[in-house]
Length: 239
Image (cartoon, rainbow, N blue to C red; front, top):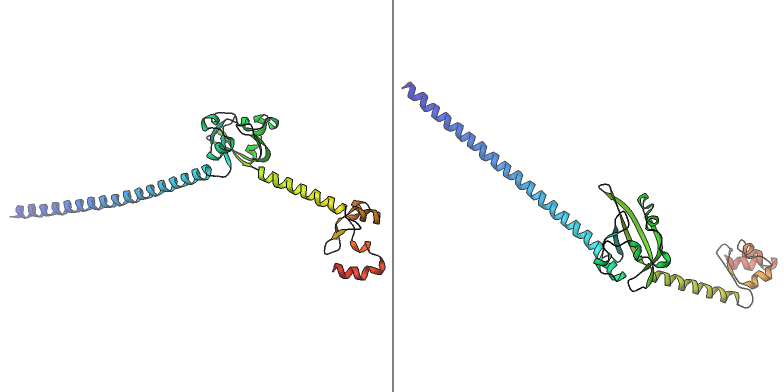
């Protein structure tokens, strides 16, 4: 009878132990499943974010209003965006692998090595002339920067067509020259001054009348050009 009792208690203890082990295994499995689910969700979120960032970069490059070129250490073109193809008139296959110097106009061509020197020190911004496939040339502003990936040097060039800017600048120069000519041909004496009375602009007649050189007039206050008896009225006009 004692033997039967011990056997029964042993069976009960074994059953309890088996249930405990089973419960622990189930709990561990559920815990592991939760960990896997969290890690999977995190990995999926990071993958989606990387894809979004990659697409964002692609959209910025492909749909930018500037031409963007990627060069290797020797100045050979590795990649270009769509805008560059439209501006220069080349097909992608014609540009990839070609030396970037082919895009510079004949009058502006320098050694590619000279152009790339110094980019690794923070980049360059300069203006030059580029040539399209049809032979037409255009003034451009180039922003270039060097970077390294696994020890290899690459260059990125962002090229902006500044034809419209140049035309606007030339128009301003012509307008300024015309204005200067009109001022110098005005009859009598003409001059402009600021709120403190410093001369800003004058015509040739003022220089002749005062006997002062342009350099002297640039340092002249209008008060000194007015006769003593008229200075009170002039002061009121200035102030």
